Structure formats: C-alpha cells, structure tokens
View 1: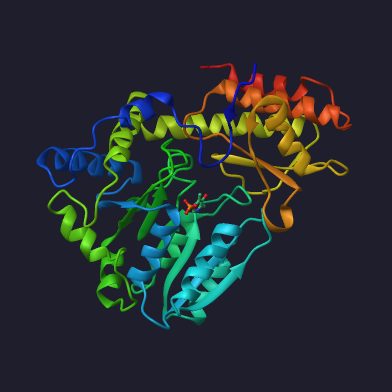
View 2: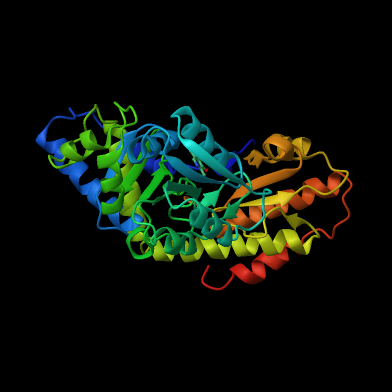
Length: 381
Ligand SMILES: *Cc1c(COP(=O)(O)O)cnc(C)c1O
C-alpha cells in the first residue's frame, strides 16, 4: 500500500484537522463576525513574534512580505547591506536591486557561519546605510544567522533598520523581536505554522515606522500605511483569505495546546539534534557549520547520485524531501523537523536514508543512525 509523508522544509505537512477547520462557509470579510476573528488571530501572532508591535497578515507567499519590507523602509538609492548566505539571502539582493537600492551584498559560502565583524566593518565605513537584510534560517543551506548579535550592531545606528526573514525560522528557531531589537520581522504560513501556502506575516518596530515615514519607493498592494490604518479597524485593506484565517486560528490554538512557542522550540531542537546525530553516526556530513533546527541539509556522500536518492525517498517510501539548489543540486538533501512533526518522523527519515544509501552501495551499518537518534529521543517522547 502506498503511503505518503511530507518531510520537505516547505510547504510542510498540514494536519488534516487544520484543513477541516478551514472547510467552513466563507463569511464576508467586511463583517463584525470576521473582524472579531481577524482581531484575535492578529493579536495571537504577537506572542509568536515575541513583540508588542502589530503583526500584519498578508495574502501572499513569503516573498511578498520580503518585498513589502524593502518597499516600505527604503528610498531610491538608499544604501542597504544584504547577507547572502544562500538562495533566500540572494533574493533580498534581487528585490533591493529591483527597487533601485544601492545594495552591498555580503556573499557567504553556503553553510559557513556569519561573522558579525563583517557588518561592523561595513557600517563603520558606511554609516549612512539604511537597512540590513538577512534570514533567521537560510533554508537553502539550513544555516542560522546570529540575529541577536547583528541587532546589537544595528541598534547603534539610529537610521539603519534590521530586517529579518523568518519564513522557515519562526517557531523553529528562537527569535525575540522586541528584546533583541529586530525592526522588521516577517514569516509565511507554509513552514512551522503548518498551514498551506498563501499567507505571510510582517511586523514593524517604531524604528522601522520612522524609516517608513522617510521611504519614497513605490508601493500599492504592500503599502504599510494601508495595513496599519485597516488593522486599527480590525480588518485588512484588501480581501482577506477568509478560510486561511480559520486555518490560522486552528494552528494558533494548537500551538497553545502544545505548550506554546518555547515548548515547540525545545522539541524542534531535540528532533534536529537527534537527526543530525543520526546522520553523523553513519558517516555523513552536515552542509552547515551553523545548523538551524527547522531543517537539516545533509551532504550526499561521494559516488552517490543525490537526485536519485531524493527521488527514491518518494518512489520507494512515499517520503517527500527537498534536494539542493544551484551548485548544490544533487549534492545535498534537506529534511524538515518543524511544524506538524513528531519523534517518529525523525526515525522514519533516518531509517529510509539508511536503507536507500545501503542499496546504493554506501557502506554503513543498518540501524546505527536510527539507534543514535533513539537514544537522544526516548526521554519525554
Ligand atoms: C520558504 C521561504 C521563503 C518564502 O518563499 P515563498 O515561496 O515566497 O513563500 C522565504 N525565505 C525563506 C528563508 C524561506 O525558507
């Protein structure tokens, strides 16, 4: 019997109960009833962002929120500093250039750790830089960036905002918008929030609001001021994806039931650590020296066809995982640990990986990776 599992780092597995929760009549988005629901989910999102600032809900994928950030805090020919640690960092550079921003791109080797002295150096020479763009979790290389340390530096520059893409990071890797001093924080629905694709979320600090006052880049759909004015009336400027809001309500409720953000972060970390130890126990290497918890990028061993490995996960075990992008196509596989995820998923992924590699001629002791992970997982399972 064919059985399917989604262990890809986005869109991640969606709980069937969440889909059922969204299968309700589509009430009109300009009603009192909808406004009440919208107000409650918008305000619950603040605790996930760890902020007192408002969190805006957008009908778009995560990239829409990235574009909104750029268009709302910068002006034409402003200087911006982009940390390009992979595909998504590269996207920051592309968006900035599209808007005519004077963009400096700090390109890192995929999987290497970011040294904040690079930013200190750049800003000391370019004190007129208006924004720093980065990721909490760079999904292409499964690496994390030191947001807290980066924020300590941008805090010294009153006109330079820190913009963090936490699409795959939020609810998988700790981020504290207010405590750390992140100015724009954004995320999407299809990663750790376990919703289908289609919504994005974004929040602006008072410093980012001041940047918005100065900003002259063109914007219409993603105009921050429109969202702000409408949220004051518990609504959105344009038609909201009503059924996705039911789904979001279910997700937020479930997150609470699971013990809240910090409990979920701890669990995700435990799953990631068990998976990483498991793959290392069978002699495999991680791509990243600064691994995130929401997903892991594993280097495919020499002589093994990585594209075939990824395909076989699906054809033989019904498991969807992700491969590598750009020069890492066929060289890495990426497996998620976030959102609707349980200890059994760690075991499933490792066990399939062992069997497939064994079949493809890689020398390993079957069960060694699984046993290593089990030893780390069994307590509190
Ligand atoms: C998934 C993801 C995005 C969003 O991509 P969309 O396809 O626009 O939803 C952005 N940044 C990171 C780090 C991601 O993992």
